[in-house]
Image 1 (cartoon, rainbow, N blue to C red):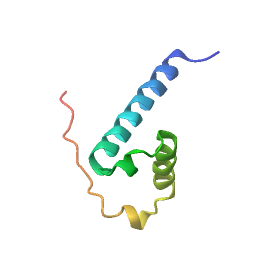
Image 2 (image 1 turned 120 degrees about the vertical axis):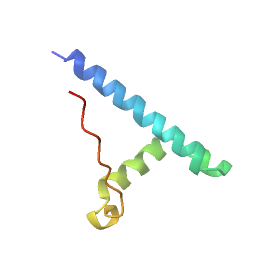
Image 3 (image 1 turned 90 degrees about the horizontal axis):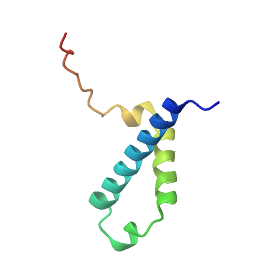
Amino acid sequence: MACPRATVVVSILRRIAYTLLSLFRSVTQRSAEARAVAWKQLFRHVTNVLVSATAEQLQWLRRHRLPPLPT
């Protein structure tokens, strides 16, 4: 039996992913040719980049420290 909570979580994650891709497309891809790339191809490209990133490529990312949660 499918878990309804898992379905909701996956739906939310999918919505977040498409929102981020649409922001990426509108902000960084200004040419008409770049914006004409199909969603499936763009998603595949982003997935490949995220999966194949090495520690050396990611070391420049800043680490954010979150404030402690109020008790």
